Each structure stands twice: as structure tokens, then as C-alpha cells.
Length: 147
Image 1: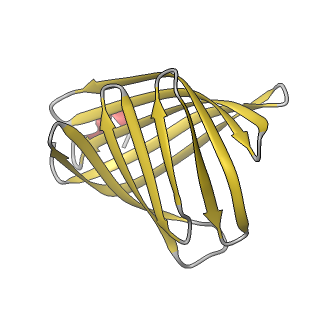
Image 2: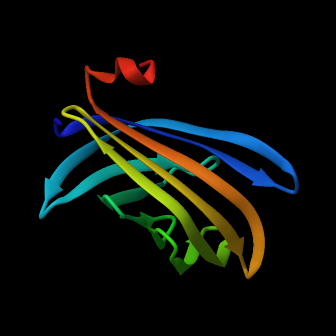
């Protein structure tokens, strides 16, 4: 895969018996080091000029997401593991717990696909069950993403 990539993050969040899609497409950078995949991208926040920098560190059985800038958090997704983080935003701070039920990594020559299924608690209350898919592809080879 090339250094310059397109990242599509899509998912489904189920809350209070209702579910809704979430999707974001952005440009980013990719590299591999010590058997781990790294995906780096900036995330805009609605109503703010500053962005959050995201670093994803991915192996076949684990994904770390480290947010810095206007949002700060270190989220860990590892099958059958519960993790907690302080999620700091300009609007305030909360405790976020994730229980990862499943994680899968599909590696191809010019793409990666990471699928994660987890439950989400905020400030010790269950908020939603989530399925998220992160598609990463080399710029210029993203026809599989419809780009």
C-alpha cells in the first residue's frame, strides 16, 4: 500500500432500539512498522476550526485509536476485552468503556479492511452496540469503496 491513502469509516450504531448509519471519508497516511499497520488522519469537528489527529495502530487481533488535538483519548479494541478511556472534548470530559465482541482484519496488496463489533458505555451507562468498518486503500485504487 502507498503512503497516501483514502480512509472510509462506516458503521452502524444501535441505541434505544433504533439504529443509524455513520460514515466519514478522508485522506490520510499509511505505514507499516514491526508488523503493525498505522493509519494517520485528521478529523474535523463540526463547529470548530481545530481538528483532532487520529492514529490507528492495527494488528490482526487489536486496534488502538489515539486521538490528540482538540479531542484526547486512547481507545483499545481487543476481542473479548473491556477497555476504558477518558474522552476529553471541548464540551467536557467523559468516561468511555468499550467491550469488543469481535475484530477482523483483511489485508490486501493495496487495501486494508478492519471490522469491529463492540458495546459502548459512556459514564458507566450502556449507550449503544456498534459495528464499525475501516476501509483503507491506496489513492487511485479505491474503486472498491466507490471513490
